[in-house]
Amino acid sequence: MSALQSAKANGREHATQLDANDPLKSFRKEFLLPTKIGSGPQPKRTSERIASHLSAWATKGVLGHFTELEDSDLPPFLHVDDAAAKLMAPLVGAEASEVAVMETLTANLHLLMASFYRPNQEKYKIIIEGKAFPSDHYAVESQIRHHGFDPKEAMVLIEPEDPSVATISTSHILSVIDKHASTTALVLLPGIQYYTGQYLDIKAITAHAHGHGILIGWDLAHAVGNVDLRLTEWDVDFAAWCNYKYVNSGPGAIGGLFVNSRHGQVGNPSALALTAVIASLEIFALTDMATIRAKSMAMTRYLEDLLLCPPSANSHYKKHLPYQIITPSNQEERGAQLSVRLEPGLLEGVMRFLEDAGVIVDERRPDVIRVAPAPLFNTFNEVWDFVNVFTSACLAAQAGTVHGSQESAALEAQDQKGWAEIK
Image (cartoon, rainbow, N blue to C red; front, side, top):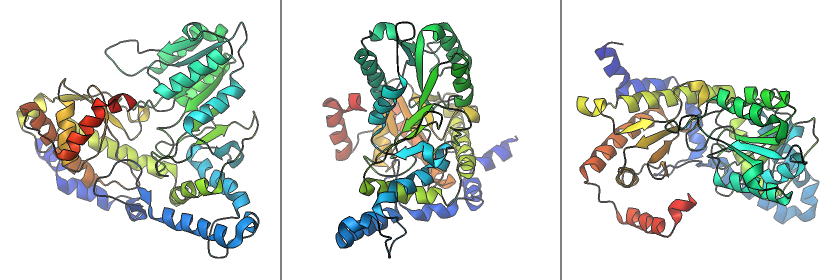
């Protein structure tokens, strides 16, 4: 690419052209977008659906379980779980009978492991990723202890081959399964690793585990609504996820789980809790995950290109970027998220600058931020704007000129109380 072509690709005009050609551009109007956008904005139809449910409850009482609601698209209370499962199934590539929208992610993992982890004296180990999300790690540890085994012996942690590289190759994962196959009862891995954004090869790893007669489950918290999943086709045994990230169902929204039809069926939760999830799933039903994934790949590639060659930066900055992208560059090995590792000492200043500029990203101390443009409501222009603000944030942090607002100071005080560890 010539210098002129590169300049044009990095200009706002190119972002505007990408937005004009976006097949999902009309979906932005489906959401209430606050000034400061984090993950999972509220769908406009959420309040309508909940109000309709509350109205039916108030006017019909117990009869609402069985009678059609004249002024609503919602089914009778008794069948809300079926409606939610039907809408959720396409997001994970499953039959509706294999899916339930219920409970929280960790509760669902416990329920699933209570069914699928059946250790004996010969096969008792659980293989998990070494940097698994803490609640997953604790859930596995508690299940092992519940069955009378010692986690130090029964919990196998998959660590990167090279400590300087955060990601784990598929070949290394398969080799760990091979090494412990004769003593392993279960494998539990993340579809997308929360810290690095790496998208694991679910199909290949599942087939390999099954080749050894080992059951395998997946934590899809960062994958559902993000990548095009095919759980039934890939013969996954079970999976669990939350719905407040890419599915946009709201803080504390109930999660979901999948159980392969080879193993049985699953249960159902409260109608009110399901209603908020249904409101978001109705938006997904207006398109398909292949279209969402295609835009996501284009948008994250665009974000990556701009981060590697920031439009507003001088040549010295571009040659000495104060960060590196630790998420795989291969688009097939990542979702929407890019994890960016800053040079030591820059995180606090960068985060303060971004917060004061109204930009919300996630931090993972001591030095990583996670950026995930969401294809249903984010635009290419917003990606372009973000990179320019991020460049300014890095420069200000390097110069030590970030002082922060009262809000930033309050967040720092929360960190001193242990909030950083919770995150």
